[in-house]
Length: 138
Image 1 (cartoon, one colour):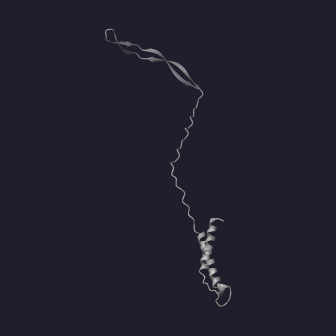
Image 2: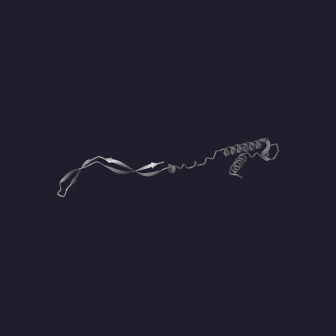
Image 3: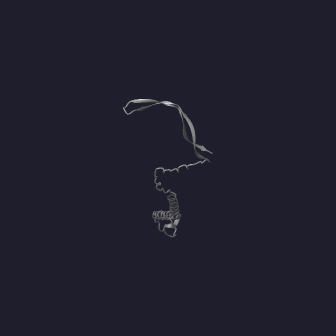
């Protein structure tokens, strides 16, 4: 038996026994029948007791049972770790080539210090120089 059915059964038995205990003892009231059950008063009281017991049991069974609410747990948001973006390497077909080119350098005055600590200016005439540059060739 489950708990609700046991509770209903116990309530009905308790109310029936209270109703039967409250019946008036009317032994031998003139009609000769079987003790206190003549004149239909006993049966009426028994029926009322049974009905009250049944209704009380139904009312108790329909009483809602409240459970404790589930605990509320607050947790910090999980850390989100993003993967780094993939590096895209675009290679072009080609190569670096060192090239030499001739560049004209204009003439200018140069300053220098002689052995006696004096500043001497001398003219340096223009000239050609070879410069190396690196060029991308496809």
